[in-house]
Image (cartoon, rainbow, N blue to C red; front, side):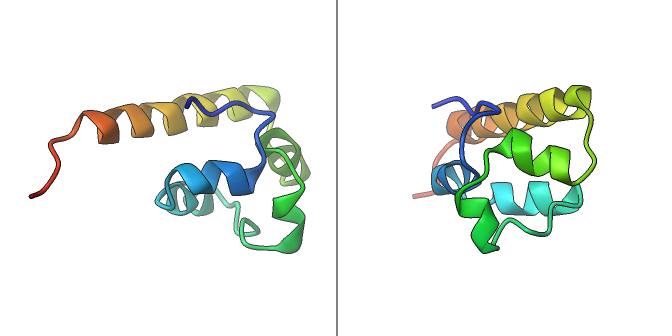
Length: 76
């Protein structure tokens, strides 16, 4: 499932917990707080000062990460 800006952060992390590291590297250190369970990715990023363009770029990066990970050979 593709990540969209209106998805809750908790739903995004349910897809892959490695996304937490990507968001934290961008300064989103609140991903584990209670507010994250009720905030969309877009809302949380705006609160942290991200522009709409940065939100869109982050969504592209997260979806690219999931695509690459899904295409990678699975360890046996």
